[in-house]
Image (tube, rainbow, N blue to C red; front, side, top):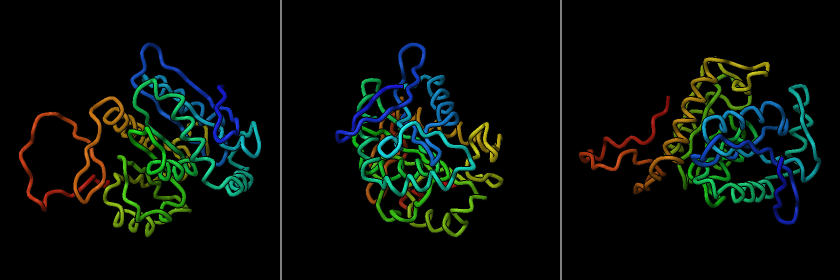
Length: 252
């Protein structure tokens, strides 16, 4: 664990380093259960893929050493309500600043952390891309155009984000790449969790790693007029498309 400071508040963060020279960095944002074993394993997986990974303990501002299990959802949500979003965004900025010497930085969040990742994408400096898993509250800020490439993984069995919510989100935010997982519920990527779905977790992780590789390791994004941020995967010029061919990022 390392110690970070945001607006004179000290908090801890779990850090995992790769072997050899890092490709870049990934900041992992916790869900309502804190930086528990699931979040630490996720950070370790990004380190194993070659990135410096840091998971800030955002609950430390109100209560330190919080590691909850699935039965403590209400307690975790109470802590998120007490925290709000202003200080967590400051803490995310401070965490990003601690790893920027490793290269470009990606932000990956889960549930509440996915919501924070979506907010932070337009507020935190020094980010190459943002990724959210079964994020809460996305429709609250849906009209704000994305400033950096943003990827969302939807769980179709998520009781807190309905099919209608997904339809509305995709209609309003075509500049966000979004994938849905039909048999998945919240927490489908936690290997030790009750909602673990191996097929969905593997697909989502593959897409996440590709996304991070594209924007953190590869060439940075370019901005298209009247659209969000997209990657230019290759440097050679491509034939110009007709105007009606530009459909934006794919939605699966």
